[in-house]
Length: 506
Image 1 (cartoon, rainbow, N blue to C red):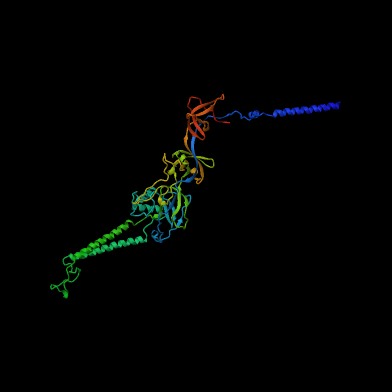
Image 2: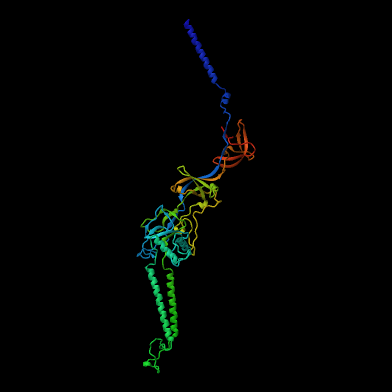
Protein backbone atom coordinates (compact mmCIF):
# COMPACT_ATOMS: atom_id res chain seq x y z
CA UNK A 1 0.00 0.00 0.00
CA UNK A 2 2.71 2.38 0.90
CA UNK A 3 4.64 1.44 -2.21
CA UNK A 4 1.60 2.30 -4.41
CA UNK A 5 1.23 5.66 -2.74
CA UNK A 6 4.88 6.50 -3.33
CA UNK A 7 4.62 5.64 -6.99
CA UNK A 8 1.52 7.80 -7.37
CA UNK A 9 3.30 10.74 -5.70
CA UNK A 10 6.25 10.39 -8.06
CA UNK A 11 3.99 10.44 -11.11
CA UNK A 12 2.16 13.48 -9.86
CA UNK A 13 5.52 15.28 -9.24
CA UNK A 14 6.69 14.62 -12.79
CA UNK A 15 3.42 15.91 -14.17
CA UNK A 16 3.68 19.07 -12.06
CA UNK A 17 7.26 19.74 -13.23
CA UNK A 18 6.30 19.23 -16.83
CA UNK A 19 3.45 21.68 -16.47
CA UNK A 20 5.68 24.32 -14.86
CA UNK A 21 8.27 23.94 -17.64
CA UNK A 22 5.60 24.34 -20.28
CA UNK A 23 4.28 27.43 -18.56
CA UNK A 24 7.83 28.99 -18.40
CA UNK A 25 8.52 28.19 -22.04
CA UNK A 26 5.25 29.78 -23.00
CA UNK A 27 6.19 32.92 -21.17
CA UNK A 28 9.42 33.25 -23.24
CA UNK A 29 7.75 33.07 -26.63
CA UNK A 30 7.00 36.52 -28.22
CA UNK A 31 5.00 37.40 -31.21
CA UNK A 32 6.76 39.50 -33.98
CA UNK A 33 4.84 42.59 -32.87
CA UNK A 34 5.90 42.12 -29.29
CA UNK A 35 9.56 41.67 -30.36
CA UNK A 36 9.52 44.88 -32.49
CA UNK A 37 7.99 46.85 -29.67
CA UNK A 38 10.72 45.67 -27.31
CA UNK A 39 13.42 46.99 -29.71
CA UNK A 40 12.15 50.65 -29.90
CA UNK A 41 14.69 53.25 -28.60
CA UNK A 42 13.78 55.20 -25.49
CA UNK A 43 12.40 58.72 -25.95
CA UNK A 44 15.15 61.25 -26.85
CA UNK A 45 16.58 63.41 -24.07
CA UNK A 46 18.19 66.85 -24.52
CA UNK A 47 21.85 67.69 -23.91
CA UNK A 48 22.04 71.08 -22.26
CA UNK A 49 24.77 73.30 -20.83
CA UNK A 50 24.46 76.43 -18.73
CA UNK A 51 24.80 79.96 -20.08
CA UNK A 52 28.07 81.37 -18.67
CA UNK A 53 29.31 84.83 -17.79
CA UNK A 54 32.93 85.10 -18.95
CA UNK A 55 35.48 87.34 -20.65
CA UNK A 56 36.06 86.14 -24.20
CA UNK A 57 39.45 86.61 -25.80
CA UNK A 58 40.15 85.65 -29.39
CA UNK A 59 43.73 84.94 -30.45
CA UNK A 60 46.08 83.63 -33.12
CA UNK A 61 48.26 80.77 -31.90
CA UNK A 62 51.60 79.74 -33.42
CA UNK A 63 55.02 78.44 -32.45
CA UNK A 64 58.02 80.72 -32.81
CA UNK A 65 61.78 80.69 -32.28
CA UNK A 66 63.71 82.94 -29.91
CA UNK A 67 66.44 84.79 -31.84
CA UNK A 68 68.89 87.57 -31.18
CA UNK A 69 67.84 90.59 -33.22
CA UNK A 70 69.38 91.83 -36.49
CA UNK A 71 72.05 89.25 -37.37
CA UNK A 72 74.65 90.81 -39.69
CA UNK A 73 77.90 89.36 -41.11
CA UNK A 74 80.95 91.57 -40.71
CA UNK A 75 83.88 91.84 -43.10
CA UNK A 76 86.84 94.19 -43.36
CA UNK A 77 86.77 96.73 -46.19
CA UNK A 78 90.53 96.85 -46.78
CA UNK A 79 93.97 96.36 -45.28
CA UNK A 80 95.25 97.62 -41.98
CA UNK A 81 98.38 99.71 -41.73
CA UNK A 82 101.65 97.80 -42.06
CA UNK A 83 103.54 97.17 -38.84
CA UNK A 84 106.73 99.16 -38.46
CA UNK A 85 109.38 97.91 -40.88
CA UNK A 86 106.96 95.64 -42.80
CA UNK A 87 106.41 97.92 -45.77
CA UNK A 88 103.11 99.29 -46.94
CA UNK A 89 100.29 96.80 -46.42
CA UNK A 90 97.95 98.87 -48.50
CA UNK A 91 100.29 98.71 -51.49
CA UNK A 92 100.74 94.97 -51.14
CA UNK A 93 103.71 94.90 -48.78
CA UNK A 94 103.37 92.98 -45.56
CA UNK A 95 101.18 89.96 -44.77
CA UNK A 96 97.77 90.48 -43.20
CA UNK A 97 97.08 87.93 -40.46
CA UNK A 98 94.54 87.83 -37.65
CA UNK A 99 96.37 88.27 -34.36
CA UNK A 100 93.29 88.48 -32.11
CA UNK A 101 89.90 87.17 -33.19
CA UNK A 102 86.53 88.40 -31.87
CA UNK A 103 85.15 86.48 -28.89
CA UNK A 104 81.81 84.70 -29.30
CA UNK A 105 79.19 86.13 -26.96
CA UNK A 106 81.16 89.31 -26.29
CA UNK A 107 79.32 92.62 -26.19
CA UNK A 108 80.99 95.20 -28.44
CA UNK A 109 80.60 98.85 -27.47
CA UNK A 110 81.13 101.86 -29.72
CA UNK A 111 84.78 102.87 -29.93
CA UNK A 112 86.10 99.51 -28.73
CA UNK A 113 88.50 97.12 -30.49
CA UNK A 114 86.60 94.42 -32.37
CA UNK A 115 89.68 92.36 -33.34
CA UNK A 116 93.36 92.70 -34.27
CA UNK A 117 95.03 92.15 -37.64
CA UNK A 118 98.84 92.12 -37.83
CA UNK A 119 98.88 93.74 -34.41
CA UNK A 120 96.74 96.64 -35.62
CA UNK A 121 93.29 97.40 -34.14
CA UNK A 122 89.97 97.06 -35.94
CA UNK A 123 87.61 99.51 -34.24
CA UNK A 124 83.82 99.77 -34.37
CA UNK A 125 81.83 103.00 -34.60
CA UNK A 126 78.17 103.70 -35.25
CA UNK A 127 77.31 104.76 -38.78
CA UNK A 128 75.25 103.71 -41.79
CA UNK A 129 77.79 104.59 -44.49
CA UNK A 130 80.27 101.71 -44.82
CA UNK A 131 84.01 102.05 -44.47
CA UNK A 132 85.08 101.74 -48.10
CA UNK A 133 88.28 103.83 -48.34
CA UNK A 134 91.16 105.21 -46.31
CA UNK A 135 90.19 108.43 -44.54
CA UNK A 136 92.83 111.09 -44.18
CA UNK A 137 93.75 114.70 -44.95
CA UNK A 138 91.95 115.87 -48.06
CA UNK A 139 89.05 113.38 -47.91
CA UNK A 140 85.48 114.61 -47.76
CA UNK A 141 82.07 112.94 -47.67
CA UNK A 142 79.33 111.43 -45.53
CA UNK A 143 81.72 108.80 -44.20
CA UNK A 144 84.07 111.53 -42.92
CA UNK A 145 81.15 113.37 -41.33
CA UNK A 146 80.01 110.26 -39.42
CA UNK A 147 83.64 109.69 -38.31
CA UNK A 148 83.80 113.21 -36.88
CA UNK A 149 80.41 112.76 -35.20
CA UNK A 150 81.44 109.39 -33.73
CA UNK A 151 84.77 110.72 -32.42
CA UNK A 152 82.92 113.49 -30.61
CA UNK A 153 80.36 110.98 -29.28
CA UNK A 154 83.01 108.69 -27.74
CA UNK A 155 84.89 111.54 -26.10
CA UNK A 156 87.58 112.52 -28.64
CA UNK A 157 86.15 115.76 -30.00
CA UNK A 158 87.71 116.72 -33.36
CA UNK A 159 86.30 120.23 -33.08
CA UNK A 160 84.08 119.71 -36.11
CA UNK A 161 81.23 117.55 -37.35
CA UNK A 162 81.66 118.66 -40.96
CA UNK A 163 82.26 116.27 -43.86
CA UNK A 164 85.96 117.15 -44.15
CA UNK A 165 88.99 115.47 -42.57
CA UNK A 166 90.70 118.29 -40.69
CA UNK A 167 93.75 118.66 -38.48
CA UNK A 168 91.30 118.36 -35.58
CA UNK A 169 90.17 115.00 -36.95
CA UNK A 170 93.77 113.82 -37.13
CA UNK A 171 94.47 114.96 -33.56
CA UNK A 172 91.33 113.23 -32.28
CA UNK A 173 92.34 110.00 -34.04
CA UNK A 174 95.77 110.08 -32.41
CA UNK A 175 94.21 110.54 -28.95
CA UNK A 176 91.71 107.72 -29.58
CA UNK A 177 94.38 105.25 -30.72
CA UNK A 178 96.67 106.06 -27.82
CA UNK A 179 93.80 105.65 -25.33
CA UNK A 180 93.33 102.11 -26.66
CA UNK A 181 97.06 101.29 -26.57
CA UNK A 182 97.92 101.81 -30.25
CA UNK A 183 99.45 104.47 -32.48
CA UNK A 184 97.50 106.04 -35.34
CA UNK A 185 98.92 105.57 -38.83
CA UNK A 186 101.55 108.24 -39.56
CA UNK A 187 103.24 108.82 -42.96
CA UNK A 188 105.63 105.97 -43.80
CA UNK A 189 109.16 106.04 -45.25
CA UNK A 190 107.98 106.17 -48.86
CA UNK A 191 105.65 109.06 -48.11
CA UNK A 192 108.38 110.99 -46.26
CA UNK A 193 110.77 110.43 -49.15
CA UNK A 194 108.16 111.66 -51.63
CA UNK A 195 107.57 114.77 -49.53
CA UNK A 196 111.32 115.46 -49.44
CA UNK A 197 111.57 115.00 -53.22
CA UNK A 198 108.71 117.43 -53.83
CA UNK A 199 110.26 119.99 -51.50
CA UNK A 200 113.59 119.62 -53.33
CA UNK A 201 111.81 120.10 -56.65
CA UNK A 202 110.39 123.40 -55.39
CA UNK A 203 113.83 124.53 -54.24
CA UNK A 204 115.45 123.62 -57.56
CA UNK A 205 112.72 125.39 -59.55
CA UNK A 206 113.09 128.43 -57.32
CA UNK A 207 116.88 128.56 -57.94
CA UNK A 208 116.40 128.17 -61.70
CA UNK A 209 114.00 131.09 -61.73
CA UNK A 210 116.43 133.26 -59.77
CA UNK A 211 119.23 132.49 -62.22
CA UNK A 212 117.05 133.29 -65.25
CA UNK A 213 115.95 136.56 -63.72
CA UNK A 214 119.58 137.54 -62.96
CA UNK A 215 120.66 136.88 -66.54
CA UNK A 216 117.77 138.90 -67.90
CA UNK A 217 118.55 141.77 -65.58
CA UNK A 218 122.22 141.75 -66.58
CA UNK A 219 121.32 141.81 -70.24
CA UNK A 220 119.04 144.81 -69.76
CA UNK A 221 121.55 146.83 -67.67
CA UNK A 222 123.71 149.51 -69.50
CA UNK A 223 127.14 148.03 -69.95
CA UNK A 224 125.76 144.92 -68.44
CA UNK A 225 127.87 142.66 -70.63
CA UNK A 226 128.89 141.78 -74.18
CA UNK A 227 126.50 141.12 -76.96
CA UNK A 228 126.68 137.52 -76.09
CA UNK A 229 124.87 138.42 -72.92
CA UNK A 230 127.53 136.67 -70.89
CA UNK A 231 128.58 138.81 -67.90
CA UNK A 232 132.34 139.49 -67.59
CA UNK A 233 133.23 139.08 -71.32
CA UNK A 234 135.88 141.57 -72.68
CA UNK A 235 134.58 144.76 -74.28
CA UNK A 236 135.20 145.17 -78.06
CA UNK A 237 137.75 147.79 -79.16
CA UNK A 238 136.88 150.88 -81.13
CA UNK A 239 137.98 149.16 -84.25
CA UNK A 240 135.63 146.35 -83.45
CA UNK A 241 138.48 143.86 -83.29
CA UNK A 242 139.48 143.27 -79.66
CA UNK A 243 142.37 140.97 -79.66
CA UNK A 244 141.58 140.23 -83.26
CA UNK A 245 138.08 138.73 -82.37
CA UNK A 246 134.95 139.51 -84.39
CA UNK A 247 132.21 141.62 -82.67
CA UNK A 248 129.59 139.53 -80.69
CA UNK A 249 125.86 139.73 -81.52
CA UNK A 250 123.67 141.98 -79.35
CA UNK A 251 122.10 140.47 -76.17
CA UNK A 252 119.02 138.16 -76.86
CA UNK A 253 116.70 139.77 -74.29
CA UNK A 254 113.61 138.11 -75.70
CA UNK A 255 115.09 134.65 -75.24
CA UNK A 256 116.08 135.48 -71.67
CA UNK A 257 112.53 136.67 -70.96
CA UNK A 258 111.23 133.32 -72.24
CA UNK A 259 113.56 131.48 -69.89
CA UNK A 260 112.24 133.51 -66.95
CA UNK A 261 108.63 132.74 -67.94
CA UNK A 262 109.30 128.99 -68.23
CA UNK A 263 111.20 128.91 -64.93
CA UNK A 264 108.32 130.70 -63.23
CA UNK A 265 105.83 128.16 -64.59
CA UNK A 266 108.02 125.27 -63.48
CA UNK A 267 108.16 126.73 -59.98
CA UNK A 268 104.36 127.05 -59.95
CA UNK A 269 103.94 123.41 -60.95
CA UNK A 270 106.42 122.26 -58.28
CA UNK A 271 104.67 124.28 -55.61
CA UNK A 272 101.24 122.90 -56.65
CA UNK A 273 102.50 119.31 -56.57
CA UNK A 274 103.90 119.92 -53.10
CA UNK A 275 100.66 121.52 -51.90
CA UNK A 276 98.55 118.65 -53.29
CA UNK A 277 100.74 116.09 -51.54
CA UNK A 278 100.81 118.04 -48.29
CA UNK A 279 96.99 118.19 -48.37
CA UNK A 280 96.90 114.39 -48.05
CA UNK A 281 99.96 114.02 -45.86
CA UNK A 282 99.57 113.17 -42.20
CA UNK A 283 97.61 110.91 -39.87
CA UNK A 284 95.13 108.66 -41.69
CA UNK A 285 92.65 105.89 -40.93
CA UNK A 286 93.13 102.78 -43.15
CA UNK A 287 89.99 101.16 -44.54
CA UNK A 288 90.70 97.91 -42.68
CA UNK A 289 90.97 99.48 -39.24
CA UNK A 290 87.35 100.58 -38.84
CA UNK A 291 83.94 98.93 -39.15
CA UNK A 292 80.81 101.09 -39.18
CA UNK A 293 77.70 99.40 -37.71
CA UNK A 294 74.33 101.08 -37.77
CA UNK A 295 73.44 100.00 -34.21
CA UNK A 296 75.67 99.55 -31.18
CA UNK A 297 76.31 97.80 -28.87
CA UNK A 298 76.23 94.44 -30.64
CA UNK A 299 76.82 90.86 -29.58
CA UNK A 300 79.32 88.59 -31.35
CA UNK A 301 77.22 85.62 -32.44
CA UNK A 302 79.65 83.69 -34.67
CA UNK A 303 83.36 83.97 -35.53
CA UNK A 304 84.72 82.81 -38.89
CA UNK A 305 88.47 83.38 -38.32
CA UNK A 306 91.16 82.30 -35.89
CA UNK A 307 94.56 83.79 -35.09
CA UNK A 308 96.84 83.19 -38.06
CA UNK A 309 94.03 83.32 -40.67
CA UNK A 310 93.95 85.86 -43.46
CA UNK A 311 90.97 88.17 -42.77
CA UNK A 312 89.24 87.84 -46.13
CA UNK A 313 85.47 87.75 -46.60
CA UNK A 314 83.28 87.36 -43.55
CA UNK A 315 85.19 87.43 -40.28
CA UNK A 316 82.25 87.28 -37.87
CA UNK A 317 78.51 87.64 -37.44
CA UNK A 318 77.05 90.06 -34.95
CA UNK A 319 73.55 90.55 -33.63
CA UNK A 320 71.74 93.08 -31.54
CA UNK A 321 71.92 92.51 -27.80
CA UNK A 322 68.15 92.13 -27.51
CA UNK A 323 66.05 89.10 -28.44
CA UNK A 324 62.88 88.67 -30.43
CA UNK A 325 60.56 85.83 -31.39
CA UNK A 326 60.22 85.05 -35.07
CA UNK A 327 57.23 83.06 -36.30
CA UNK A 328 55.04 82.43 -39.35
CA UNK A 329 51.23 82.32 -39.47
CA UNK A 330 48.74 81.63 -42.25
CA UNK A 331 47.85 84.71 -44.27
CA UNK A 332 44.23 84.61 -43.13
CA UNK A 333 45.43 84.92 -39.52
CA UNK A 334 48.07 87.52 -40.38
CA UNK A 335 45.34 89.82 -41.69
CA UNK A 336 44.01 90.02 -38.12
CA UNK A 337 47.36 91.13 -36.66
CA UNK A 338 48.62 94.66 -36.15
CA UNK A 339 51.82 95.99 -34.56
CA UNK A 340 51.34 96.68 -30.87
CA UNK A 341 48.89 93.85 -30.23
CA UNK A 342 49.54 92.09 -26.91
CA UNK A 343 51.18 88.65 -27.03
CA UNK A 344 51.54 85.84 -24.51
CA UNK A 345 54.71 83.76 -24.81
CA UNK A 346 54.51 80.32 -23.20
CA UNK A 347 57.79 78.56 -22.39
CA UNK A 348 58.38 74.82 -22.05
CA UNK A 349 58.71 75.34 -18.30
CA UNK A 350 55.11 76.57 -18.17
CA UNK A 351 56.18 80.15 -17.54
CA UNK A 352 54.25 82.81 -19.43
CA UNK A 353 55.80 86.12 -20.53
CA UNK A 354 54.10 89.17 -22.06
CA UNK A 355 55.18 90.80 -25.31
CA UNK A 356 53.78 92.59 -28.33
CA UNK A 357 53.65 92.28 -32.11
CA UNK A 358 56.50 94.31 -33.61
CA UNK A 359 55.93 93.75 -37.33
CA UNK A 360 53.82 91.68 -39.73
CA UNK A 361 54.44 90.59 -43.32
CA UNK A 362 57.41 91.93 -45.27
CA UNK A 363 58.35 94.26 -42.42
CA UNK A 364 58.81 91.19 -40.20
CA UNK A 365 60.94 89.16 -42.61
CA UNK A 366 64.57 88.84 -41.48
CA UNK A 367 66.77 91.29 -43.40
CA UNK A 368 69.03 89.65 -46.00
CA UNK A 369 72.50 89.20 -44.62
CA UNK A 370 75.18 91.25 -46.31
CA UNK A 371 78.78 92.14 -45.66
CA UNK A 372 79.60 94.94 -43.28
CA UNK A 373 79.78 97.27 -46.25
CA UNK A 374 76.06 96.77 -46.73
CA UNK A 375 75.35 98.26 -43.35
CA UNK A 376 75.02 96.43 -40.18
CA UNK A 377 72.26 95.88 -38.14
CA UNK A 378 70.06 97.85 -40.52
CA UNK A 379 70.87 100.37 -43.20
CA UNK A 380 71.95 100.03 -46.79
CA UNK A 381 75.24 101.78 -46.30
CA UNK A 382 75.89 101.91 -50.05
CA UNK A 383 77.82 105.04 -50.99
CA UNK A 384 76.37 107.37 -53.56
CA UNK A 385 78.41 108.76 -56.43
CA UNK A 386 79.58 111.61 -54.21
CA UNK A 387 80.67 109.24 -51.45
CA UNK A 388 77.54 109.78 -49.41
CA UNK A 389 75.22 107.03 -48.34
CA UNK A 390 71.81 106.44 -46.94
CA UNK A 391 70.91 104.29 -44.00
CA UNK A 392 67.94 102.37 -42.82
CA UNK A 393 66.79 100.39 -39.81
CA UNK A 394 66.49 96.73 -39.42
CA UNK A 395 64.13 97.21 -36.55
CA UNK A 396 61.57 99.33 -38.34
CA UNK A 397 58.24 98.32 -36.90
CA UNK A 398 55.34 97.22 -39.06
CA UNK A 399 52.63 99.60 -40.04
CA UNK A 400 49.05 99.11 -38.93
CA UNK A 401 46.98 97.89 -41.81
CA UNK A 402 49.89 96.13 -43.55
CA UNK A 403 48.47 94.23 -46.50
CA UNK A 404 49.09 90.49 -46.23
CA UNK A 405 47.91 88.05 -48.94
CA UNK A 406 45.38 85.74 -47.31
CA UNK A 407 46.63 82.67 -49.17
CA UNK A 408 50.30 83.03 -48.28
CA UNK A 409 52.09 82.36 -44.98
CA UNK A 410 53.26 85.54 -43.34
CA UNK A 411 56.20 86.37 -41.09
CA UNK A 412 55.49 87.89 -37.67
CA UNK A 413 58.11 89.45 -35.38
CA UNK A 414 57.39 89.68 -31.65
CA UNK A 415 59.36 91.52 -28.98
CA UNK A 416 59.07 90.45 -25.33
CA UNK A 417 58.52 93.06 -22.65
CA UNK A 418 61.49 91.63 -20.75
CA UNK A 419 64.21 90.64 -23.22
CA UNK A 420 66.58 89.51 -20.46
CA UNK A 421 64.15 86.73 -19.50
CA UNK A 422 64.49 85.18 -22.98
CA UNK A 423 68.20 85.71 -23.69
CA UNK A 424 69.16 82.33 -22.24
CA UNK A 425 66.58 80.65 -24.51
CA UNK A 426 67.96 81.79 -27.87
CA UNK A 427 67.27 79.11 -30.47
CA UNK A 428 64.45 77.53 -28.47
CA UNK A 429 60.79 77.27 -29.45
CA UNK A 430 57.98 79.07 -27.63
CA UNK A 431 54.21 79.07 -28.00
CA UNK A 432 52.86 82.39 -29.20
CA UNK A 433 49.32 83.58 -28.57
CA UNK A 434 48.36 86.94 -30.03
CA UNK A 435 45.24 88.55 -28.60
CA UNK A 436 43.28 89.93 -31.56
CA UNK A 437 39.99 90.62 -29.78
CA UNK A 438 38.50 90.70 -26.29
CA UNK A 439 35.19 91.61 -24.70
CA UNK A 440 37.15 93.25 -21.91
CA UNK A 441 34.39 92.55 -19.36
CA UNK A 442 32.32 89.42 -18.63
CA UNK A 443 29.53 88.74 -21.11
CA UNK A 444 26.88 86.05 -21.50
CA UNK A 445 28.42 83.26 -23.56
CA UNK A 446 27.19 79.94 -24.92
CA UNK A 447 28.94 77.19 -26.88
CA UNK A 448 28.93 77.82 -30.63
CA UNK A 449 27.04 74.50 -31.01
CA UNK A 450 24.08 75.99 -29.10
CA UNK A 451 23.41 78.59 -31.83
CA UNK A 452 21.26 77.81 -34.86
CA UNK A 453 19.95 80.00 -37.62
CA UNK A 454 16.30 79.95 -38.61
CA UNK A 455 14.83 80.30 -42.07
CA UNK A 456 14.57 84.04 -41.48
CA UNK A 457 18.32 84.27 -40.92
CA UNK A 458 17.90 85.09 -37.23
CA UNK A 459 20.33 83.44 -34.80
CA UNK A 460 18.64 81.65 -31.90
CA UNK A 461 19.29 79.37 -28.95
CA UNK A 462 16.91 76.85 -27.39
CA UNK A 463 16.47 77.39 -23.67
CA UNK A 464 15.17 74.57 -21.48
CA UNK A 465 13.00 76.01 -18.74
CA UNK A 466 12.56 74.60 -15.26
CA UNK A 467 9.25 72.93 -16.23
CA UNK A 468 10.99 71.06 -19.10
CA UNK A 469 9.61 73.31 -21.84
CA UNK A 470 12.08 74.38 -24.57
CA UNK A 471 11.84 78.01 -25.76
CA UNK A 472 13.68 79.42 -28.80
CA UNK A 473 15.26 82.77 -27.90
CA UNK A 474 16.52 85.16 -30.60
CA UNK A 475 20.04 86.39 -29.89
CA UNK A 476 22.55 88.89 -31.23
CA UNK A 477 25.99 87.34 -31.59
CA UNK A 478 29.21 88.97 -30.42
CA UNK A 479 32.85 87.92 -30.27
CA UNK A 480 33.55 84.22 -30.79
CA UNK A 481 36.56 82.64 -29.13
CA UNK A 482 37.71 79.24 -27.87
CA UNK A 483 34.44 77.56 -28.92
CA UNK A 484 32.18 80.13 -27.22
CA UNK A 485 30.29 83.10 -28.59
CA UNK A 486 28.92 86.15 -26.83
CA UNK A 487 25.10 86.39 -27.00
CA UNK A 488 22.49 89.00 -26.13
CA UNK A 489 18.75 88.24 -26.12
CA UNK A 490 17.12 90.35 -28.83
CA UNK A 491 13.40 89.49 -28.72
CA UNK A 492 12.53 90.37 -25.15
CA UNK A 493 12.57 86.80 -23.88
CA UNK A 494 14.72 86.27 -20.79
CA UNK A 495 18.24 84.87 -21.05
CA UNK A 496 20.44 84.85 -17.98
CA UNK A 497 23.52 83.23 -16.55
CA UNK A 498 22.74 79.66 -15.48
CA UNK A 499 19.91 79.14 -18.01
CA UNK A 500 20.40 75.86 -19.80
CA UNK A 501 20.66 75.92 -23.58
CA UNK A 502 20.36 72.92 -25.86
CA UNK A 503 23.51 71.76 -27.61
CA UNK A 504 22.26 68.39 -28.84
CA UNK A 505 20.13 65.32 -28.16
CA UNK A 506 20.90 61.78 -26.96
